[in-house]
Image (cartoon, rainbow, N blue to C red; front, side):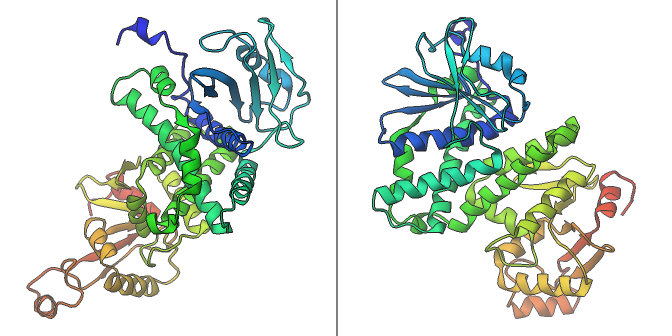
Amino acid sequence: MSQEDDEKYPPSAVSSWSGFVYQGKIALYHSLKLIHDGDLDFELQLDSSDDFAIYKNGKIHSAHQVKAKISKNRSGYTNALEKSTLIEYDKIKGTPRYFHVSVKLDNTDDYKGASGETVKFYQYGSNHHCGLGEIEGLTKELIRKLCEKNSITISDNLVNFNYCLLSEKISTKAIYNHKLNQVDGISENRAAYVGRINARNIWDELVAKNPYQDRDYYAVELKARLQTHLEERLDQMLPTMNDATYERARRLCEHIRDTHINELKTLCQMMKPSERFQDVQTSDIRRYTNLIQAISAEPIFNHLPHYLDRKNRFYAPTALDVDENEDCESDMIREMKNNEDLLILLFEYNHLIASKAEASFTFNTKFTNSDDFDNKKATEKLESNITKSLCISVITKDDAEDRLNDKATD
């Protein structure tokens, strides 16, 4: 595609990951608000004409600029406000323009730019701002109202489930646009401009029959919880993060977003290998992400986040909090006996980095392969020292760093 062709499309913010998180949540909220008001004939466009825009019949219906935590003073947004008033690309005279902020400002009066166009500060009820931690609650309340309005039986779990699915839909589209740009070589402005989400597709997700029969609720919910924790941590820590720490957190966040639900269950099983995956507690998520941030070596984000030493041995970070070595050993062996999926994983990732442990330790599982839980002949061979069994190493952060940095000859 020629440069001249690319210039037909408005510039994009696809490359700006930090803005993408907040604007995706705001875009979902506004779309649901339109649907709640009876409008199903629009398309949501991410990162092109503006941070997001609403199109109807091929023409822009409203343009939205989204800013997270720049300043509490209106003056800190002057350049962005002026940019919002520009007459360019699809934005013509009279196009409704809205400005979204995450913090309370000293002045939220309408802004009139040099073009003569006016930008309004978007309202969330009686407020002109909405923080990252508040938008989820507002969006879930809209989902509840939509379901009640259309006589759909609702529960807290179903509201949460639908919120997770719709959030994933927005994220997937943004990731797809990014993939078109990074992998397929299509300009990011064109990738976002042509990749819109139809309002009826959003609605179809809400009214889908028997969602629990079609999708794994716990995995969907967990993906959203992992993502929310990472986003909130970044939101809180951004002012004090150096570039390297921010980049690692960003990559982990994108990896979680890009991980298929079925693969995510594998990740969660390895996060807490001493327990069967059903649900992972917030404390587990915190320990796991903090460990990845604390280890000096760069993780490899391929399938499961992991590390390699100079002998190409795999090391998997975990949320293991080891008080007693023997208890941890017995918990893991018991789980391996009843969980073939975990056993298969541990044959590949048998060096586990604990989030907390007094000392590193190794134990013999007495398994020679994943088919051996009740194989009498395999057990006899093992006891005769004919076959080598799987040994699991649970390693402290410091010992793991020594190995990963080639300070040990282990």
